[in-house]
Image 1 (tube, rainbow, N blue to C red):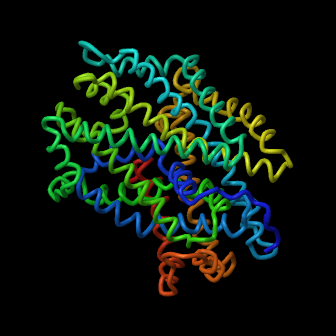
Image 2: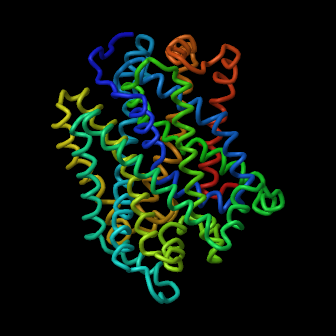
Image 3: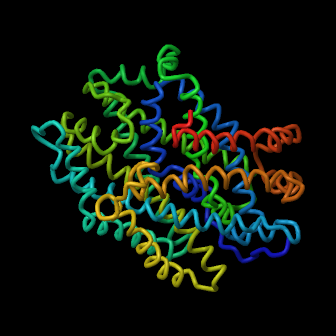
Length: 463
């Protein structure tokens, strides 16, 4: 090991680490994407297959990324350099991770801004009363065609992220994330209880949790398996170093697997409870649960409008969504700011200040991409600059980055299984066993590669 930070600031408690790391994993994708993919994939069987791939795919790669961070006590760029063999180039993945974090923030800040906008829109009664057909969709389209409003909320998100992370790991990220996560979990429980108790809500629970093979066959067994496999990978935010950075702040009191399992359990619990909020409500009010990405911004406001005290429930739901999105903003911001501080010699406050302007500027194309900068060639990626940026991050950098972490931790040309096992098994708790070596070395990289290849094929309609 060529360099290592002995003065690394550590998170003050295990609870703080679990909540901060789980907050990074949860994000919008988990509480928005998991329910709508579950709906599109037919419910019950998808959930079971997802659990299987979470154990086989998500948790091992998560543990590898955490191990790299904890072993080096450095940001991803320098962590690879510290652990790699002499004259190798694994540290280039650290730079790819940093680029991936910037790309993620270029569109994630805009989407997080939508959540803040919907809190105020719902609370002031925009989605109440006798709404005409298509009214909610028209309101969302109006937001997309209003770059000034989106830019305002985007700047609010970037400001919150830069100020919070600039205050430090313990005083900023850990303190704020713990409060946000605990409030988020409390709001989720209240919303879930309310949805489950609705008349007709039990049919939603049956769709969500009871496997139905005929429904899975109608959708396509291969499609359901691919959706479960890909989401099990993407849900934990692995591949671009956002977990490695929190690994660098971990204590060595517990094994990596023990902490990785806790993060995955909390992440999955939040996803499952999000489904308990959405599916009973959809069935109670005869709303199609397979509405896809529009489920959050178009379908759910109509559902809340039909509920007693729906204005209150709707505002609470989007507060919950905003907290989920901000937790990911803090995590990715932390990776960016720490990398810049270590590489360029900036203080944390300087890095936060500079990156406020850098990320704000980089986010402008996404804000303008729904109106001013909407070009025909973007249709291949979905139609907008956001879709292009999401494609690069979600379909390319995350799976390929996850494969690099996997190969680095198992190959004799990288850190190797010996180094990985030594770090991952330090502390108390569940351990990686020697018999797992063959799976980690040969099978796991092929599964991650399959996520990448199948994702590209699915995106471009190649199968």
